[in-house]
Image 1 (cartoon, rainbow, N blue to C red):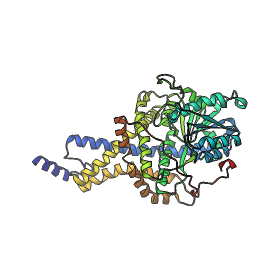
Image 2 (image 1 turned 45 degrees about the horizontal axis):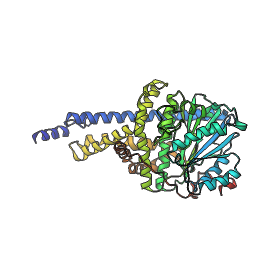
Image 3 (image 1 turned 135 degrees about the vertical axis):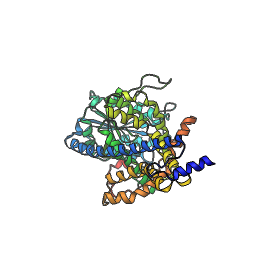
Length: 471
């Protein structure tokens, strides 16, 4: 007891800048390591935001002189039981203003009304092509469908009027069945592809039914990823791809085709069977020498999840895919980019571990402060550092950088900060739950069901006029 009393006495007299004095050496080392890691993270976030500001200006200048008619835009729509959304999705792709365009819907063995809807659409939309996948090859993952679509583009799209079209000028855009892209998306994207080293560009993801609290939080969450983490990394060429709204050169896809180590019955293709196949291919594009970019000049609107249980399940699946991406760390420091970009590349892959460590730091810091021997005068600031890094700083910067019609950016950031902070804490356990699932080998998932299309869109989402096929 005397040892504990002595430690408590030392802690009580510790200066504010040394809150863990008197604790066991192991505890002090752990807490200072976690605190240093968190402070470095704050510095990196600020640096990325500064780079993002300049990158956005550069992208705007590039878009002003780009020509979308130099490219063939192939929109690939993975569809499994999408009778609720597929007609709306196709009709919006029909409205996209592209001189050269093809639409490929991958019907992954749907057994609802999707095939009938697509059959009607094919008769009305000349540029629509349907790739029907049948069991047992169907329903084995999104990556398998995308691989078939890659082969389909080579065999069926690059024929006739597009025969001989150079693959460096073919852009394959992956748009989920609930995706809505602006009509002028190709014009905004063409600026990024004028740099022939760019292999993939990720559009800003927005949530179109964002009047619900959970869907509003998802919209800001995607903004945090795009504005705070991805846009700044674009200057290095290390921005990664997302599952919806990714645009990749066909030549770049050809460069990352997997040909070795495939299980029996699995055909070759650019995508691999991962829970986050988008992250996987984005990393491999960079390693193949291509650059990845994030753009906020155009977007893809998708349906948000309105039920917490479904949202939690979806985010756990994504987080588990991020844990699986640790296998990509091998050779990360040999990626053909600058030294700073390599370090950023490694930090990106380590993100779930960093989040887990900073979360641990916050929990321990609060526990030592509230229930341990850390005095009030010195215990508050480490907890604030952990808390601000995990929630306040990236959230505030995102709300400040994004805009909503009729809302002042600074006031929007101030008043939106606490609601978004509460949203992030609802989902905070997903990283830990995903790690437990991965360690236990639980890797089976079911697709998140679509909800009926929401007609009550926010004022800033234009309800474009679409062809009659949307009916």
